[in-house]
Image 1 (cartoon, rainbow, N blue to C red):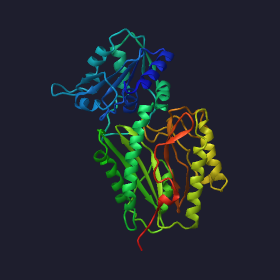
Image 2: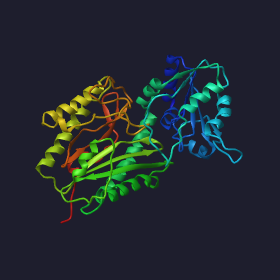
Image 3: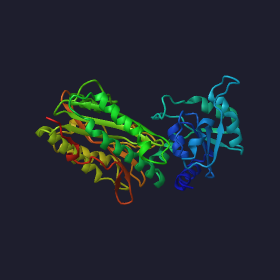
Image 4: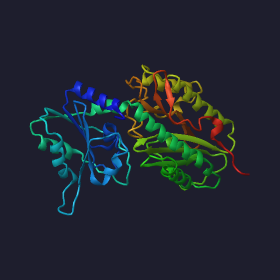
Length: 398
């Protein structure tokens, strides 16, 4: 099997938690359990304590499953012209056929989670799935399995890290191709559109990738200071000479997500801008040097914060240094959390972003967000492009 480590981890966690079967429908969990990223959210993954993992997938998506590492896939029809019923009712038969053995304890999703979308709308079973499990298996105990799922999502196998390298490579191609579109007089929304288009056309440059896409935002001048808030936004403002231009992107390849930010300067930076760039890069380097198995996630955050404090800029760093990335994109609660209060300890295979930043309302902001994987001896940079201040200075025509 392509991803034997993943099935081994699943079996171990289920055994330790005394769960006979784990049933998941959230796309991020289905991807983690099977290697398949559901398009519209009606697929369901079932993992058993003996190591078996199965996928119940809509008929329309069967052809896409071949690109995952999942081999035990069962097709079903979420809807038909015969009758109107919710997709959950169509799951009754395949679930009963798949979980034939007597099971005493079934784990299911129950808590909060951030779910990226691969399509314009994503179906969520929500509470109907647990109700359906209770109906189909009345003698089984239902057990919330969010702690297990959090732990399983936190680490990536070598197979999964390779998929994230691919996602990072496609994103790097887009940044390299589209950075020149940042020019004086161009609207933020136009720059963002160029970046997003290049994520999708990664299919043309990378064979064997059935699906890739992403989101991009451009925030320039004083708007770049707003990037430290809850979500990014592009506007009609046109880029001016001397602007800081913050490009934030979340892209994916086969459902494996990136979280990347680069801040460019439209022309040669003046002294204050260069000082801010140097401060953010010093914080980045300090954080990276802390990354290794056994290190505390809070120590990584503290290293970045200390580097900015030494330059009198700690108050301008208004969010945590990073969070887990891969099966999702932008969840601040995804483990490991590089946060001052984080209890998380880094392990080999963990993948997360490192995003030191400074923001000044009315002036602008600089954030540099990379993705890294924890290795046996330190870390691997999964987004190795535009990583020097010189790479981020864009010449502007006179």
